[in-house]
Amino acid sequence: LIGAHSNLPETDQATVKYMPHTPIVMLNGNFAKPTVINVFGSSDDAMAQLTTYLYDLGHRRIVFVKEMQNWIQDLKEELFFRLMREKGVRLGPKYAYVMNVHHGIQSLARHLEEKVRDYTAIIANNDDMALGAIDALLAAGISPGDLPVVVGVDGTPQALEAIRAGTLHGTVLNPAHGIAEAMMELAVLFKYGGDPGKAPAIEDDHYVWLPYVSVTLDN
Image (cartoon, rainbow, N blue to C red; front, side):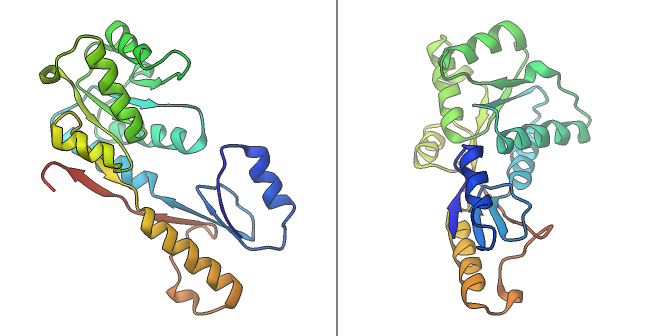
């Protein structure tokens, strides 16, 4: 079975529970079960690239923006703050913001204005949120030339257009094609057998992590 994490834990748990002997290749899953391999774009790699990019540009007061509580977004947040600590920068809780869809993107602009103020850059969990943050700041009256440096994750067409326009400074391209190939290779290996040495590298018996590609106006 090839599946995708549904953001509904009870659904994913039921899939694994009621198919205990069926090999499952799961996109963005988190199951340490003998029959399950979880395949991802590497959050470690994405956060390392973005954090290093902003740090090397001289930014120290960076806000991390995510949309909701789930384990992948929480992992990215944890990685970001850890990487900044390793670089000698300790950021307080106000530098993490959960964007509440019920309050709209304007709530982010209010948070930045009222509680942070000294920030110079934003890392968003994905490109949609990065573009939403830019829209919120523009709507709050910040001119395009005064926008903070904003970066996102995924490399969507809209993000690439924003990079060309100069409002988004960068993103990291989700290895979607590599993920699809890895999932198919693993499924074929489980079903028909073959040389495990030619399969994607599996870490901790259950995880395949694929790297992102940095995208800025330079490339």
